[in-house]
Length: 313
Image (cartoon, rainbow, N blue to C red; front, side, top):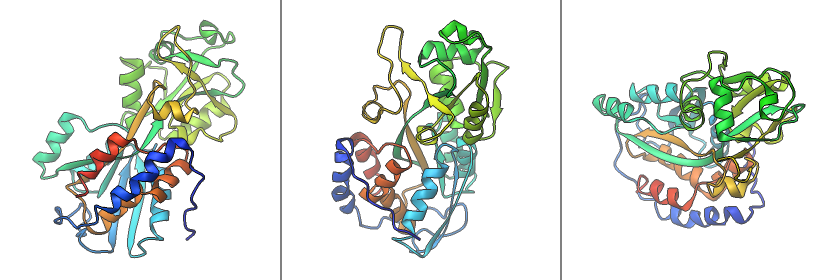
């Protein structure tokens, strides 16, 4: 398998590149956690590990797994999507080693996990600027968070109401087990979605739906939008009168100025050890974070570096 190439890292990545020296200081093994859902003990250098959950994360995590194969040839991984809710449910039921989630676990989910003998440990391995996307032929370039929310609530139904052509708006979104569905509902819509929204099984289906529909609007992790043809990301303003910011502006997404910036999580059952710990360390290393960037996402911030480290000691 090809070794992941190191990218020319811009100033935004300097902090992350320095992080490897910190991670290297965390090489002491910790006590083995509970046996993971697939029955393999993580104290082994090899083993088979299941990763399940967020559709937004599935491609970048698959790329990280492929890069990790150059570091550890004995460990094997299965990476599947299905939505953040699916991954979290699998972790609660001890059916996966890592739950990918584009949203934090809820208090109820954490309580349910603990009641089932699972101790959820959160790792933030990347950041995302969630993009609102439209067809490339749509003249609309800018929207406020409020306008997007009203569109998805069904209160704004025609593109002419937001400076576009006199055409009805077609809504594309995710199914309710998606972390992006929850994040977008709670952060942007702030209420129920319109009954007219087409619920797609995955992010790729949203992108393809909008690509084929000149009246369509959707939302997707930025990694699905960068370099994609037939669609474009709309510039978003927090409020009317404030600057419109593109999710393609890495610096503003990284700094949190872009209104729909969010961390991407992975949840484990207890502190990792053995090959599983090694994989998490790889994700957070220079090489792992370079893969994150290559896949269109952003590296972890210093704040989350420190939060992650306490789970690896």
